[in-house]
Amino acid sequence: MAINLNIIPLNKWLDIKESPLVISGPCSAESEGQILKTAKKIAQVPQVKIFRAGIWKPRTRPGLFEGVGEKGLTWLQKVKAQTGLLTAVEVANPGHVEAALKHHVDIIWIGARTVVNPFSLQELANALKGVNIPVMVKNPVNPDLNLWIGALERINLSGIDRIAAIHRGFYFFDKTPYRNAPMWEIPIELKRLIPNLPVICDPSHICGERSMLLDVAQKALDLEMDGLMIESHFDPDNALTDPQQQIKPDELSQLISSLVIRREEGSIEFAGKLEELRTEIDKIDAELINILSRRMGLIDEIGKYKRNHNITILQLKRWSNIVNDRLKTGLNSGLQKEFLQKLLEVVHNESIKRQTDIYSGKEE
Image (cartoon, rainbow, N blue to C red):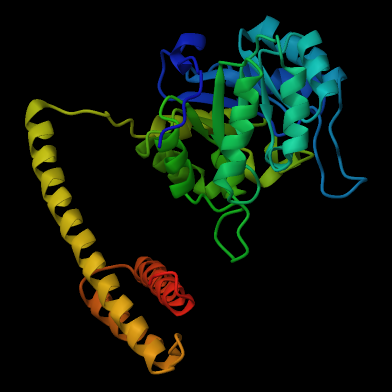
């Protein structure tokens, strides 16, 4: 079911003439010279409307560079005056909000480490009551959609109606090519649940290094994300934080120029063919649901039969043989192994649950 948030459309509070919308700037504000030099170069890229910079940097351990603090906000005021770019910073507590507002920051965002804590989110929401400033909310570090939605709801309930989500990827215990696994299904589900919510992708934090930025940015646009946040620094190799994921402003311009901007809708002929194919999918989905229903009916019979003959629910040898057989059949049919494994796991878990209910008498 859709979640209703009171949100003003992105194009009503941002002047978006060039596509896609891009937010860019260094990971951290390091000096006034670094900020202004980077900003002036970024301002030459038409798609960039917002200049971002970390003023307060949450670090895992003390002693690392934790940002320049409030003095960096005066540098951002100069950026706006000299380039016309809007400015954005991350805030993590009410004191940060107060300082950002005092220095006329245009947009604030809430970072992944803050989003995981509802207490911190509520403190920020309380500090934002009666304040007219756009707020962007990054996804939590862990892949928890409800935490992300809860953070957005708290900010919206405080009266903020210019709000957007930032997809920056998720921590994943398995090794992946990414710094933070994109897990695209999560922002897609977020957009399904809150259709009027703008979602901006942060390829820099997803990738963790430069070589994959273009591919991730392109996929984000193909999935109808509303914009990109990409870190840029005039001298990224010598940046004080995350040098490997930042690019030079001219490289940013090249990356944006390489993106393919696709239309959401096509011609009448295109729409007709698409509708024809979607109708076929609807029919197949109905068949799939019917097949799954019949399969679960057989599972119920098996559960009752095993219970009546005092046999355990889980038959590991049988399940192992099923997995191997179905994987072989599916792979020969052109299906992906990872998809098949997930599908089989979901079906198996539901089968075990139904049989457990039968053994406990819930299904009688």
